[in-house]
Image 1: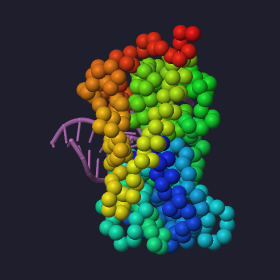
Image 2: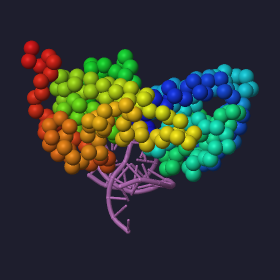
Image 3: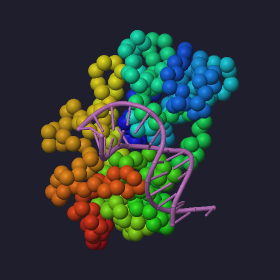
Image 4: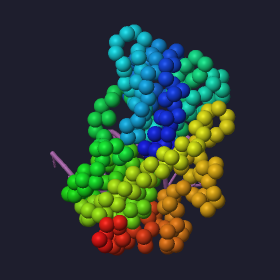
Length: 294
DNA sequence: CACCATGTTCCTTG
DNA sequence: CCAAGGAACATGGT
């Protein structure tokens, strides 16, 4: 479930549940998700430690703990890869087949599950240094984006996936943002005019903010029997009206009509990944902008 | 069986 | 040296 909005919603959900809890024991069923891949080091560092904070940076979960043996706070990271999930469950509950790591918190347990094992738990926080600004934060401005795209010949869609440019956009929201901004995904980044950069900037923020708002309506108690996380990308809010059954406007909609103009949505491959777009809305023609004709 | 999948890293090619 | 493209990672869904 992992792009910026999903991680953000997850962090908000987990933070109050973990705050203050002590890791009594760690059960590692798949050491391959650890970095360094040392069960011993991971266990020694975190066993007995107390959760003091959880936040997000890009697609990373940023955990802070107070180790048992004095010393200062320790920060470590979680990354969900393609299929990773964290959730809190009651001990003794049947565990999913691909539970990779389980943190015993006493009356609760924190489960990290990941069928493909692409996700990682990292004791090293260096990856954060390579991230660009938060798209919803103050550093991400129109001027910054314009400057960052200005010299690049890469397709704009590919550029949006570059985590050192801006952190947290993934394959789904890259397509969604470009559709919303009505920009052709195959355009070289440097071809965008300033008003198009502004539209894209706005679209990125709107798409991510809306996804966070939507995700906040979904129950995340995966482990406790009821809810399932598969609601997240393709489902709909419990109270959503029928005409808005689908939340994503273009992603995974190849061959179906554009919600805006009715043209057939197309799928292409860029950088070995699928891109979805409307050939009519995203033809790169002039578009009325708020300031366009003034 | 074939193809596709929310991500990142590593290797090859040009 | 750099950029671009592809494979690999591992499993499941359609």
